[in-house]
Length: 201
Image (cartoon, rainbow, N blue to C red; front, side):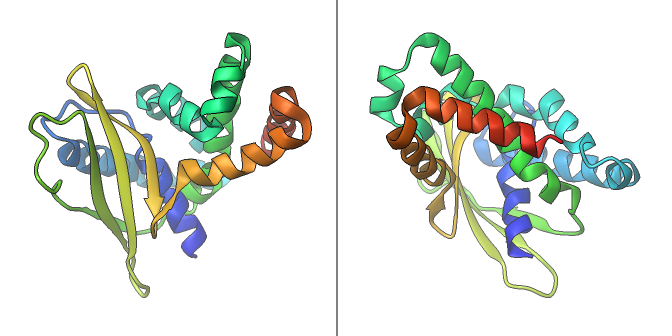
């Protein structure tokens, strides 16, 4: 139960960004949009779970700070050592990995709600902030979440999130570092492509 609830929260920050004056309002609006889409398409999702993946690619992912998230997940040394072609391939495979990892969980959404808290110290003059929240589920304990956002061109984008203090980016970084130690950057890319292809079947 907790596993897919976390997955739902992980994908909510990939939602399409509605213009908002502050990151909390953006997250509230977009999480509501995502939940509404899941509810409205429940019948379609039940018969075609891959519909969620298509939905995410179309309206969610274009508003993620993919380069920053990818750079942090891969790690400074590996990112700087990679060629431009390898970076592009990694970002493509990383996005696919994120979407396919969480699509099944999103398809299982029922009635969970998310409560967001104001940013400590406000957002004036800041280009990076953290927004704390919790997932509220009936019949179970609340799950604490936090989102790290960056402001670019007057718009807020999420580039990492944490569940119970565990960073999504750092979790992926550990996995990627292990693959790189075994087969280098090309080995990691091959492993990611193989994994993503298997998940997409």
